[in-house]
Image (tube, rainbow, N blue to C red; front, side, top):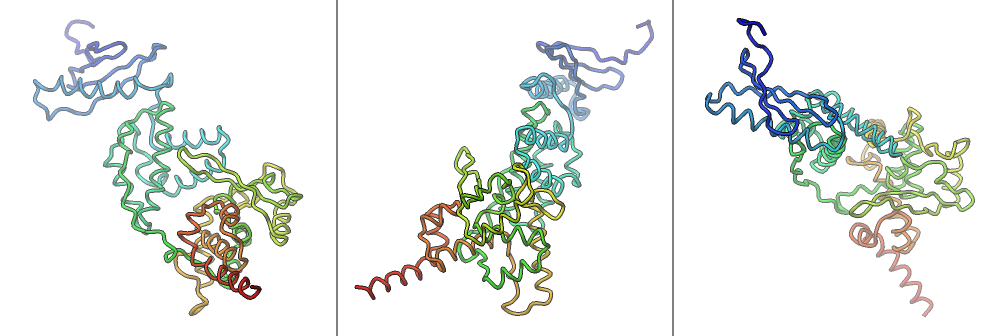
Length: 380
């Protein structure tokens, strides 16, 4: 630099291996510089410290720089990625697909489209994300949703950001470590919707063809909606008359498959759904011809309820709160009450436990037991 010229480049001070703190005299700003093992330099303009006393500015800038070094220098990948929240979540979706979890990837993508892509959160840089940003986003999505639903959405976003962070997206995981909202719904038999056969038939008639098939499949198996959504053609054993459904359970969660025994009517139903499909093809598809996602089936069912209730009156109306799970609850209760199947068999068939059967469905066991006891007394 010739005499009289103003230096625009920072003056650098080495703080550690590959770590430097710089100061630009012209703009009175501070910048951090990091060099990885391949010699690639990365820079970070530090937050303005103009409000801090001159004697304390260096110490404050050094602290900010060291916090950034801790983020970028502790990465387990070779190159750090400095992008937006959306970019981090898109990495999560790609990683799910690469690991063979396509159904989970599709569900995550639909959730992110609904909750993040059109929200200001999506465009925030992950490295500058704060806990306040996350709490404000959570407040924006709470309208019309129960706390347990919001908590489930938050867990999905947090899982995505955590994985992206491990893959090199620069950010502080403390920023998205939200404390869960208090669970405002106590799940009991009284708050669970049990639809009558007529109500289920009416809802199926009001639903779109694809949704009608989906609800019928739940009614035949008593399976969880997500289990049916992820079932593929090869899970259906025509000769054995079974359908393998899978769900995750335990800590750590493990995929637990079970072979659901199908009635003759259910067997004929699933034969029709399987016809002409490749082994890896989804057994059930949504109106767009793709595997069902949680939000898609929820929207379809609510549309069907609204269509039916538009003209229905009194007891013919579908209750508020009806969901795909209402068909599962109905199947479990009828296996116990109408068909008199023992609780252990029902628990295996539907992928639940005897404890849950006793907790939520015991009132349906008693009538069947009384009938059996009366039959014993008659033959005594």
